[in-house]
Length: 252
Image (cartoon, helix red, strand yellow):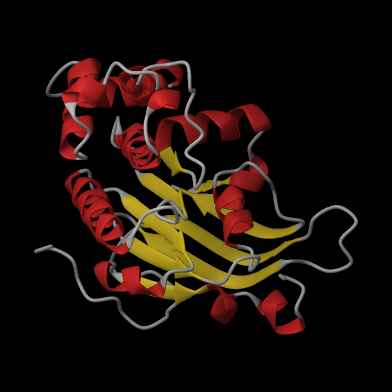
């Protein structure tokens, strides 16, 4: 891919000169009845439009960190800012609105509604967010934008109206990516989205996802245990290098 920069060495802070899409300071999180935190992060930031590869083995706390960034859970200590908003100071309703308007999620299991068509799954964010709907309609209708994304992500037009539950794993993955991208959210968080794909399909999918994110100026946090994908991203971060809880084994 022409605009893909080689993965840089591990750094926890965003490059100077860019506004931060995500900023974390002095964070600690533990699950109920857990004796020690599974995440303890002094500082971590992602710049607006930056593409970060977050690497770590299974069980290292990657998905937990993404849930915290999305405001699904709150830390017991510390600060998480998303687009300048301190999540700890927002009500649950306002966190939900921030997430719906500004964050696209790409899950490992995709989380599609199996009875809806591929096209209608992609359009779901525009149903829940007037802002995403307006952004999707800047150059074409939201439906035409959903079709453009599905075509760009190499899903055949013949499959756009099929129920998502009838699609292959690879096809569902592309639908989930189009759903995360529609309406050009400022942030996309992707949790092991290529784990079910072979190496060739992984490469193609990551290239297309990065190109679409770059076109929208979207910050991308891509989580994977597969370090072969790291070279496509602006920066690589090893979770163990920023998570002090990993030193005591609490994140396992």
